[in-house]
Amino acid sequence: MAELNGGEIIAEYLEKEGVEYLVGIPGHGSTNLLDAFNDSDVEVIQPRHEQGAAHLADGYARASGKPLAVFTSIGPGATNTVTGVATAFVDSIPMVVFTGGPQTHEYGEGILQEIEREKPGDFPSVMEPITKQSFVVHDVERLPRILRRAFQEALTGRPGPVHVEVPMDVQGAVADVEIPDPEHSRVQSRPGGDPESVAAAADLLADADRPVIVPGGGCVLSEAWDEVRSLAEYLQAPVSPTFQGKGVVPEDHDLFVGYAGWIGSTAANELASNADVILAIGVRFSDLHTSSFEPGVSFEIPPSELVHVDIDPHEIGKNYPVEVGIQGDAKVVTDQIHDAVADRTDPVETDGNEYYEEVQRRWDEWVEMVEARRADDGVPMSISRVLAALRESMDRDGIVVSSAGQPQETTNPEFPVYEPRTNVSCGGFSTMGFGVSAAIGAKLARPGRQVVAVEGDGSFLQTNQEVACAVQHDVDLVYLVLNNHGWKSIRNLQVEKYGWDRVLDTEFDPETDIDYLKLADAFNVEFAERVVKPEALVDVLDDAFAHDGPAVVEAMVRPDDPDSGAIITGEWDLADLEN
Image (cartoon, rainbow, N blue to C red):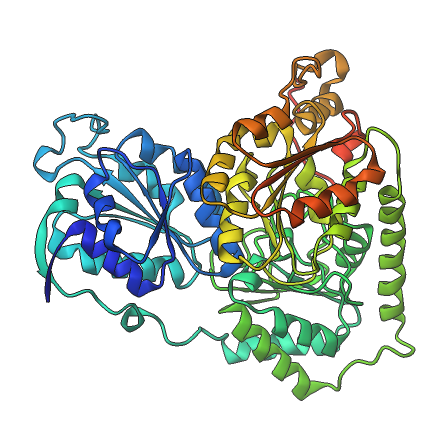
């Protein structure tokens, strides 16, 4: 037992958890907590906005599989985390968020920055719907137990963010406590699937003529990529991941067929909608992925028979009826299914296999279409042309980070990745500005990898202050800003629904728009280049990656590409306002 104050307890516990960084901005509600990290091995990273702190932790976890800790003060510092925490929650990304709180003896007295009109110290109610659990530490002696439970909750089952409010007096209070060993509160095994359900799934797959495997973000979280690839190769089944499953199978693998949905590949939509059996592993079946559930566009379930595997039973059968629903860990259950299939049938051959030949033909047709877009040397450039140069410049294991908007709508379907955890992209919450900080986190997690944040100008402006964080901490990454002078994905939706005469102003006048090179200079970025002609792209990107420190590359792209520059192959249901 050791006599420690609340801040010291947190610091020592984070060290035991192996947490490398504590990310946040100091405030009067966190001074006691923060002081303890003067003597800690946990490095403190200070972004410029608390949303950026949460996105940084998010990017770190997506790239590494390990959580970081976020800290903020009481009040607006705490509420500023909400967008970042919600982004992580929707995509099941673990982190632990510490916020300050009113002194326990002043709860409900309306002290500076307290939310108390409905309930005393009511900020945890704000976090309740966007975290797996929210704790309040009323007594410093309870802090070690709550820390253990917070990380246990964040990391086990379906991962996600957890909130811990630590009142200001609890941060400074002293107690004789023992810091628990995290390993003693962890599940030592992963949950497998019910044997009867696994057998039923194997029966369907062994007899299938047109199986399709759909791995989602759950396969990344459980590190099930080897198991997915092995099962796909045994069945010679095409693999169509979700965007959160991007990287589970290398995109140059002969069974990879792209992504189903609104901006999916023609190959994936055709094969998935005509499958006799679909094996979905760690998948939510969202509206963008399913073409808003329109039958026969991306999926048709039924008559396709669905085997749905997920750690969270809430997802099984939520949006499509299942033939077999299996609750369990993606890695374990996929391996179980593989063994059960192998007991029932020999490996499927490719020679003379008409389905395999169809898979190759459909994928080749899609690649031909994309390659034609990538070869376009017009000025202003297309986003596809910029991404082609980026892929040529980057290492095979480089990490690409993207936020919402036009760049993400083209990057996810068209930019190939070849290894797990090399695509870091906000999914279900589709958050503008995510990538500016998430890229910092990804680089901190994988310092030996190239990291690029692909940002639209509108998205970059939402969180551009975090470039200062990258400069301060000398984080070696590239910001690739695709500048089309406005929020063009939203403008294009307005045009599609109401016509040009009903478009509200979503454009920035090029004559008065931000000068991104001057912005980079203001942040003390030493490498900043603007690219107008496509033939200069690769050289500039090569130089940016070679530069030691943050770099900004502004690529001037077309402002008026149809469909925001993406290839629309599916459907997306947006409600009209017609009477």
